[in-house]
Image (cartoon, rainbow, N blue to C red; front, side, top):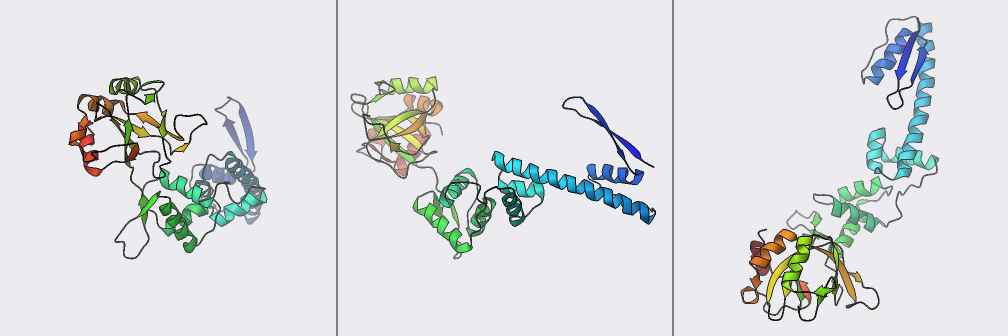
Length: 312
């Protein structure tokens, strides 16, 4: 007996019907769609042989569709290849062979290995060792060994993206460098911010306006500064106090020709912290750093005091 299967498509409301050559085969297809396993019923060998031929053609059609779908997803760049391999139940080697047959590059990115690893390291939690690096690079199409993985970890350590965790029994295990705190000095008599005076009152008002990241000037490139660091703003001159805080949103970069200073970076004022500090600032006489100037890493004692005043 044959079975008629009706399809009602939800996207456009259309309907279609398909006739499957045998009831048993129809039940097998239904079970597969329901993620179930249906054992072959007792049937004549000739009937089973016929159903096998139909299933073979069906599987060939589905496999062709799956390959094209895998290539389409890879071309979109929206899904990591490791996740794509899991969805397709394919190991890395088999997935890359499939993609190469369809003209896709084995390496999914034009970035260098160090750049790719830095992107993953800074975007994920946890510790990093050579095994995790090998797996990460493998997901991008790079087959590297343990030695190369350790070299990549050392490179990111030299760039101060990662720091080695001590006392791991001889194993090289790394973690992302914790955000740094910077003391940024403004002279209300000379410096400007957002085309206006850099007084504590005006900076506090800018923080309340919550206008997003703005450009800040630097006299020299601070290689250790990066997105996620904190900027504690010290107002010099007669003010002599830390009265604002901002979040660094970019690493320093060369400023446009004609700028106030040779380097710039992006930072966004923290409204709550700045409001608290404007009411209860950290004054110079309370600070461990008695001669603040330009921009430099903040001393631990001053960070602790500033955090308390900022209600952090």
